[in-house]
Image (cartoon, rainbow, N blue to C red; front, top):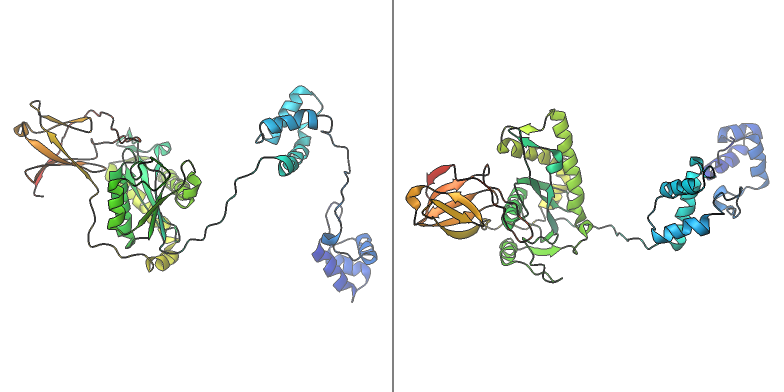
Length: 395
């Protein structure tokens, strides 16, 4: 057929059919013309074995501008797209380079990059062993435009992934990438998985690393957390997020799944935080069903959990002033007036405060008002609000 290249398979088929059929019938069965059949009988060399031509079949339309204009542009900015260069040539030489020449230019640029272009980053496929590596990271969810009670809900997800089976855990975090959020999310993931990997990998979270040097300079709290679960801590090189690819790629797929579920739901508003937490949990469980077989294999290789969880909070002391207020990390809270003059022991969690006086829990600050906006130094922005929920209970 005109314009269609004859393949090795067609040549072999024709030669086999030719043993028992006339030339015209053998050619028809192989899907080639009689003229091609005669050419094959004169030279039965397979198409893939024939030398490729080294000459052009038509003049190079970019010969006049290639060395003087195109190559300097590529050397100055090697990642310029072919269409961008073509548009510049069209502006500089009106009527000389129509859009139909785009593929020709792109092929020339591709050849130039192979011979003279910059070196590219090399990626090697990773072979993950079951039970060896678990990865943690945080991912921002604000682009999904979720609202709670009609109000915008700024938040992110803590995301944990087992590298071998792709089993994952995610929970909602209001605020930044604090140690409290990391410790709470990681422990929830490990206890839900029913075991611990031998290695826990993150990027250079300031909640886990001091980031004073390239060595594994763990913070004291993060090292204690790793030791409690007998895991080795590692991190990817700074600025190279793709080295955490097992969890980074899962971010995109998880957020796409959540976005699709929100579109199917018809709206993005939730009655309260608990309803949104349950919605996220359902999406993660649905994704985990697809890797159930691989997770059963990995589950057998996970280390046993310790007898109990370790702390996932930070403890501070705060005096109650005569204004019936106390300050924790720069945020002002109100307290019952009967506590004026007393010192409170405050346990700071990722989503709440628990306050104690003489080992009795006095009141708690829930996620509706308590909000961290954590940056690299774990500083918190001042938030207007007061303790509005009181609950009496023992320790």
